[in-house]
Amino acid sequence: MTKNARVLALFDIDGTLTKARLNITPEMRAFMLSLRERITVGVVGGSDFPKQKEQLGDTVVADYDYAFSENGLTAYKDGELIGQQSFRDKIGEDAMQRLLNFTLAYLSKLNLPVKRGTFIEFRKGMLNISPIGRNCSRPERDEFETYDKTAGVRTAMVAAMQDEFKDLDLTFSIGGQISFDVFPRGWDKTYCLSFINAEDFDEIHFFGDKTYRGGNDFEIFEDPRTVGHTVTSPDDTKAQCEALFFK
Ligand code: M1P
Image (cartoon, rainbow, N blue to C red; front, side, top):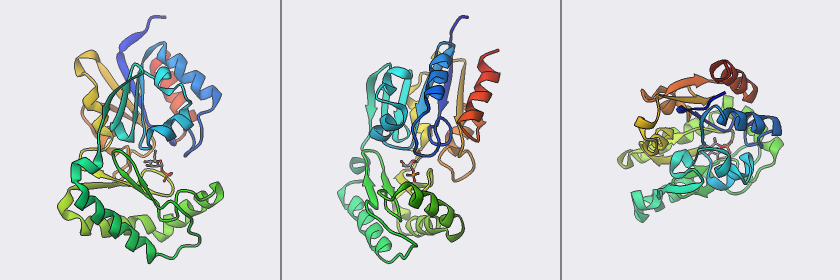
């Protein structure tokens, strides 16, 4: 078997390599390492780097050729940090405080079945806003996701923020179960492609579960630089990769 390093496969994390916000299984990790013996492999998640390490392991930057967190706003290649972007520097302190104050005011008027703590996570490249609060328990997280499918708490809040902050040219992206991400337009997952030298690859594949419009995999899935694949679970990711790269 010879490795074809000119084929790159990039993978979303939640729902693609792991179940939502859970850790990668030993079997899936072993599969990804075996895939890397055949082609070049990278991960691109919406979460920040500490969460990426929690889910994929402390060895994440060694296990993958590329490890992009916050959509690539923090970028590692061959174990080295090659890029980091700051949302605060991009929009400035005044706009940041407008965003934070609006969010706090909006959330203070919201009644939900349960509310917990850590409603805003201030990340290097984005704000992550959670109406229930990020330190809810796993059952509360799952219940909020089900509740939100009919209550539309996040879609209503995103619509209100889109209206309020028309002047800031932001993207609001619902990528997980209990929260949404806010960042400048263009800082979606296609941002990570700016670190990839097109001349190094004949094909760039992307695998993700939220590839529909409004999902946080949509833009990179649709991007002409990638061949997009929609998956339904880690098992499906493995099956699709076996069919494509283990012939
Ligand atoms: O990777 C997808 C999303 O994962 C988390 O979402 P939630 O906690 O709502 O399930 C967050 O880290 C979010 O930023 C990320 O986009």
